[in-house]
Length: 151
Image 1 (spheres, helix red, strand yellow):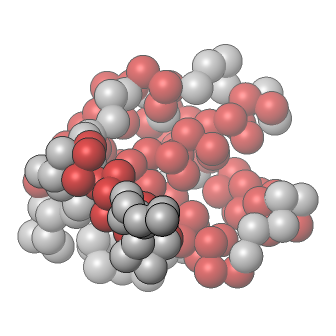
Image 2 (cartoon, rainbow, N blue to C red; image 1 turned 180 degrees about the horizontal axis):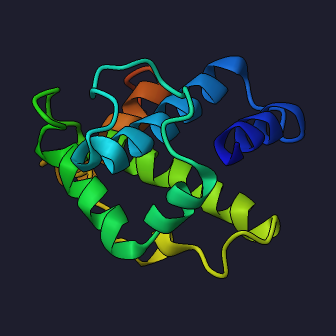
């Protein structure tokens, strides 16, 4: 199965950690569950993987319109499972983008359809200056921008 080949690739060739590989596998399984939800497929809470889609069905669903529907599904509550933060949705789209790049290299796709999907904004409502100060302060132990008297 293509998803298994991708997880094997990122584990052995790219040397991603076991935790990262599990996160990627879960994100791919979530996309597969999304693709089968209208066709009477697995329930949303089912275990990840398990051959939900054939390779051909998976490739058929890797189109920009379907990926945009997936993004909206994640943001709007995933069939009662709760809404996801924009950063988590971006993680799912990044996993799919990496998967599509892998499929391009393997000759299964002609282009990466995820590239045409606009990513949700992960803004927290703080200004960029406030975010920069908070980040700097955390790195410098609260001393960022502090002026020292030189006498």
